[in-house]
Amino acid sequence: MCIESIINRMLVKYPLFGSVVAHSHFVEESSIETAGTDGKTIYYNPLFLASLSKEEQVFVLAHVICHIAFNHIFRSEGREKDLWNIATDAVINAFLKQDGLPLVDGVVAISEAIDYDAEEFYQKLLEEKKQQEKDNRNKEGQKQDSSNNQENSRQQNDENESGYHDVGHDTHAMWEKAIEDKHREEKSSCEKDLMDEEEKQTVEKDSFLSKVKRLFSEQKQKREAKDESQGEVEKKQESEKENEREEDIEKWSQRGEKDFFKQNKIERKKQLEELRDALVRQSHGCGDTTNRNIRNITSIGTSAPLLDWRRLLKEAVKYEIDWSYENAGIEDGVVTAYLEEMPQPETEIVLDTSGSINEVLLRNFLRECKNILSSSKVKVGCFDTKFYGFTEIKNEADIDKVPFYGGGGTDFDVAVNAFTRRVENKIIFTDGWANMPSTRIDAIWIVFGDRKINPIGGKVIYINEEQLKKLCHYETKGRAM
Image 1 (cartoon, helix red, strand yellow):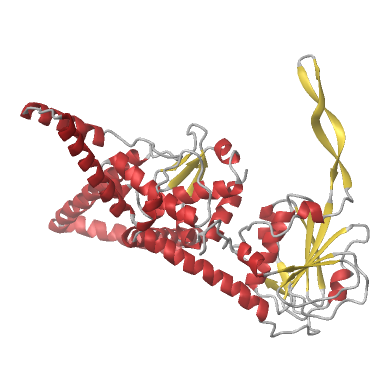
Image 2 (image 1 turned 180 degrees about the vertical axis):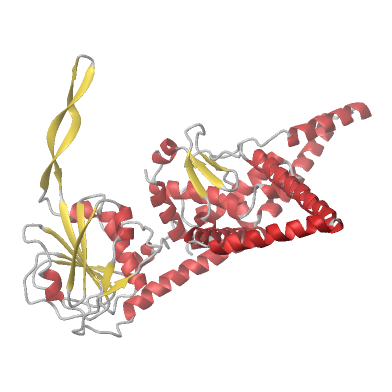
C-alpha cells in the first residue's frame, strides 16, 4: 500500500486540494484504528487503508483532507463537539458520495446534508436536539427544581467540553489537543511581543544599550548577507507554500463546503476540456524534424485503468529467480523458503512525444503506464522522428522521474524499430497523426482521439470520450454530473 499513490488519485479527483496536500505531512500510525488529523499532519493506519478498495482509500483520504481544508478543528470552538463532528462528517460525506466515492463502513451518512454547509447543518441538528429534549420533558411531565436544573446544566456543559467522541470511520481524538496547542502558541507569541516592546522601551532609554543593539543588528545583517544560500531559498519557498496553504484554508472555511465542491467540479471539467483540446490540436502534423528537448512533465498523478492489461498482455513470460514460501519447510523450528522460478512478463512501451502531443496528453499516457506496472515488468521510451532509448521502470516513482524527450515530427517506422526483437509485449501510445509504418509489427496501438489508423499487424484500441472522462476521474456512479 503506497500512500503517494492514494494521494495522487485523490488529487486527480480533487485538484483544489493541491496546496493543502503539498504542505501537509503524512505519517503511519498503527496506534489509531483508521485515520485522523491534528490540522497539520495526517495520521493513518496502513493496515486499515490496505483493507479498503482503491476508491474507498481515496474517500478516506479526501474526508480527512476536508477537515483540514475547511478548518473544521478550529471552527469547532464554542460548539457542542459531538454534534459538530456529526455535522461536518455528514456534509463532506454527502458531497464525496455525490462525486462517486463509496462510503466505507461506520461513516455518518445523512443524505439531506448535501444541501448545507457545516455551520448550517450543525445549527439544524442543534435545533432538532433542543426540540427533542423539550418534547421529552413535556412527555414525561416531570418537573425539576432550580437546583437540579442548574446541576444538570452544569453536567451537560462539562460533557460538551470534555472532548471529542468519534462518530464516524476517522478519529477526531486529536482535535482537542490541536486547539490547546494553538492557544498555547498564540499566548506565547503575545508574551514575546510584549517582551520585545518592553525591551525596546528600555533600550531607547539607555543610549549605551541603544548603540550596542545597533552594532549587533549591523553585524547580524552582514552575516545574513554573507550566508545567503540555497537552503535559505528553499526555506523561503516552503514559507510561501505554507502561506498559500493557509490562504486556501481561510478561503474555503469562509466560502463553505458547498462552494468548494462546486468549484472543484468546474476545475475537473476544465481538465477534461484541456485533454479534449490536446486531442484535436494537431498543428505540428507528422513532420520530419526532430527536437531533442526535455519535456518536463509534472503532477502526473494516477487514474483508473482504461484497459484490462492482464488480459491484453500476452502469455509470453520471462522467468526470474524469486523466493517463494508457498512450499516452504520447517527446519529446526525455522521456516525455510525454497528458491523457485516465478513467471514475470515483460513489456516495452514507446510514447509518441512529437509536437502534436502536449503535456496534458502525455501526462495521461504516463498514468496508464503506471497501471501496466501491476501486470508486468516495464520499459518506457520516447520517440518523434528519433527514438531516445528505453528506461527500465520498477515503480511509479520511476515514471515521475524519467526525462521525456521530443517535440518534433512523428515517424512510426522509428517507433516500431525501437522494440527489442524477443519482447512480445509491445505497446505504442499515440494520437495516430502520422503515416503508418512500412514494417509489420505485432504491437498494441493505444490511440487517443478520433484519428483512425491501419497498421500492418497488431491490435488498435481507441480511447473514446467515456474513457477520456475516466482519465480525469470524472465518472460518477449512479448520478449525473
